[in-house]
Each structure stands twice: as structure tokens, then as C-alpha cells.
Length: 107
Image (cartoon, rainbow, N blue to C red; front, side):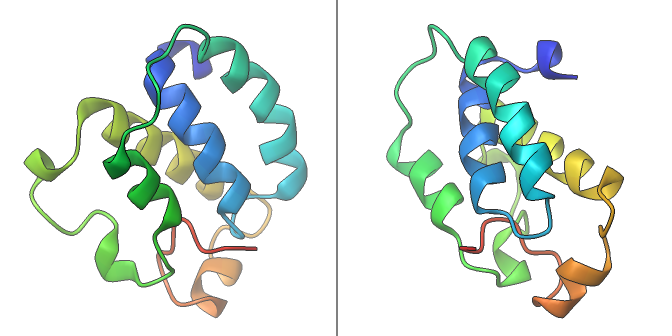
């Protein structure tokens, strides 16, 4: 799954998983090693990437707008984070307890 990500998407996904309370912390930590390896040679994160990482838990922020509002790397990273959350031990309960389909709420 990590090998399919672009280097920029891997870097973004690692940062997003660190902030996602619906992703198991131990999974985020373990995945970060592979994501960091895949992210080698990536471009620096853009302002839009940092805004995506810093989004609050309001579900209207992710991804509500047209796909054109997100880069291909951002879409890859969001899909990766969602896949991790779906496979986690508490994919629904934590998300609903914290406001629905949250993505990058601070821990």
C-alpha cells in the first residue's frame, strides 16, 4: 500500500496520521518508518498541504469540495489515511465520538 504512494503523498500521509485520533497511534508510529522511507526525495510540503494537516475535526472540510481543489498527492494521502482508519480497531466509534469523519484533529 505504501509503495503505491508518491513520495509527496507518503510525506503528507505520515504527517496526517500523527494527528489523526481515529488512527491507532501504534499503527501511525509503525507506518511512519515506511512512509518516511517512501517520502525520500519528495518536495517540501506546500501551504495547502500544511492546511490539510492542520484541519480541525469538522467533517465539512475533508473532502467536501470538487476534486480539483486537491492535488493528486493530497488525494492519495487522504485515501491512505482513510484506509488505515477503516482497518483500525475502532474505525467508527472514535470518529463518531469526535465529530464524524474527522481527519486531522489534534490528539
